[in-house]
Length: 164
Length: 245
Image (cartoon, rainbow over all chains, first blue to last red; front, top):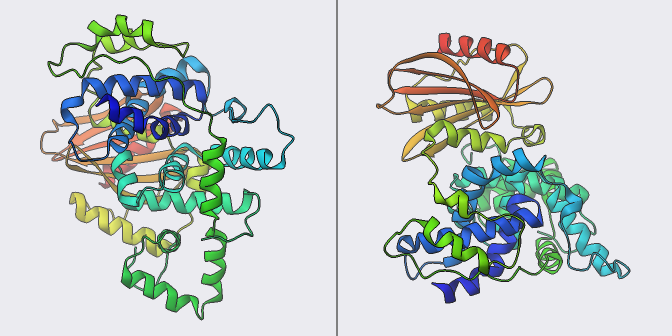
């Protein structure tokens, strides 16, 4: 289990940050997710994707248990400026500004849309996989992605390049 | 959604993502050849996903060190027993969850589930829903089939606009969510679960996860009207729904 968690860790981390919209809260959810995964290890089916399973745990933890506490004690949601990006301190290179802008645009999406974008477009999951993680119908995944596409289409930098 | 001639934004999104089934894909491809309005709608949804993915992956900060974890808990000992030892191994974060996990959270029931879901809704979420009345009506018929209630003639509630109806689920039971938006943008949802185990309950006001609620049960259905708004107008809206459904 722990070896598998090491492999799944980076993707689960990204999803936790996307879930919460904040790096520090993402770290908290990640910790809690790792703990819960160990506790619930019996429930994992060998041969299935550990990262998906952990993301579903993270999603449940955030929505059902942690989010309300954080919002109550943390005074708000999704302060975009609190998302650190890798090269934020040296924004001279145009590339860094560009990638920062992309993450910033994703982070301005409503929570539910951001989660769907994170799973399908960043992590490359199918609609079915994303729906299973978020425990919602596929149609809802599609609605969230459609709404997110509209927003990002208008706001994303360099949308004129090869697109789909 | 894919029936008939109407092609929704969700259909177009599935088409762009390679998730559309053959029939839908062919239908959209054929329509795009001659329908300029559809072409424009497709263009408004187009996204450079490869660029987005590459940029997002590059921009994310590296993960924090992995916490030192206890062995897999085959015996299901209480998590709090190793929570204290775990804290020493955590290199990051201002918060720990040892205390939090020491006491298992009480079961929340379907209303808590709905409240968590509803908390995700913002005015922007509903602003983004721009569907044709015919599509909304088709959704209402679908949810009517799911829970056995007639949603085809939902009552008008002053100051609330019907946005969408969808079928969710809770522990294997169909859970209908009918999304409304108030004039000030506030999301409000009428949620109905089909469950024979509901005890009869008159209109009961309350609060759940910071949202105002009115609940009532009748026959095999549990009803919940929920939104971040004053109690009185929510209660008045609930009375209208309770009379009609």
